[in-house]
Amino acid sequence: MNKRKVIVYIAMSLDGYIAGEGDDLSFLSIVQQDGEDYGYHAFVDTIDTVIIGRKTYDWVCKQGIIPHEDKTLYIITRNPQLSETSSRYYSGDLSELMKRLQSESGKHIYCDGGAELIDSLLNMKMIDECIISIIPTIIGGGTPLFRNHHNIQFNLLGSTSFSSGLLQVHYAVQYP
Image (tube, rainbow, N blue to C red; front, side):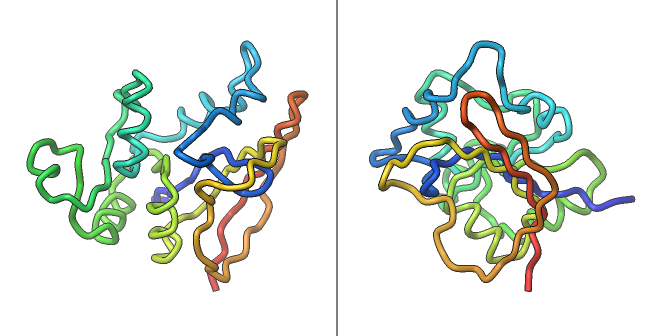
């Protein structure tokens, strides 16, 4: 049995931000095209478990969207009281959770952000692949995708360019 991969699927600006100041995601709209999902639905078919940071989850819910209702979802939080209110919230040891999830059978595991969660998983060497959609704009500030220098190399698995100017790169993560 193959180990379940942990895959980040995320969009960022050309200068490396996943959100502008004040969690502004309006820059994503410059590549919106009717009928184009940039491979998202095909990707989601390869996963059955989602981990997401609480702040990211809360932001998505404020947009009127309840994300990933059809998947096993873990909302990662530092607040142990939240994990007492719902089994979806997880405040325990992230490394233990990830090791358990990877040892179980199933499809791959989707890390749906945010930057703090991605940073933690990179520090633990637990992200296997990154699919990054690069939006052709510079926003100049906000939340960077990569928060710290990790001395990690990425091996290109593929790339796709779209008429909107979006470039999607798919990398395998190679840890030192």
